[in-house]
Length: 111
Image (cartoon, one colour):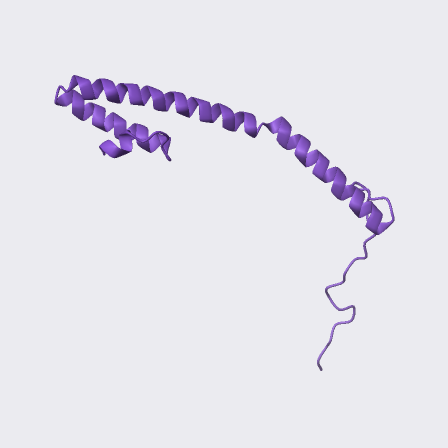
């Protein structure tokens, strides 16, 4: 467990924090102040790292950027569809439909 605590950048921050908290509790019960202070420092470092990663993730995938990307993608696909179909595409217009009859018009009566 000590090897997991000494890693520079953990793979799973929440799991690492939980392991450190358990080790910290064990150190407090055994009254080992040096290990306790090291674990507290590592815990604060992990919290700072978690805050940085959360901020970078939020700035990386902001809704405004996703909306802009989707808007440009929709514009490009619409232009390509217009070129291939040759007519104006209007997604809100009604399309001509023909009703389908599911029942026969004359019933088959068996004498």
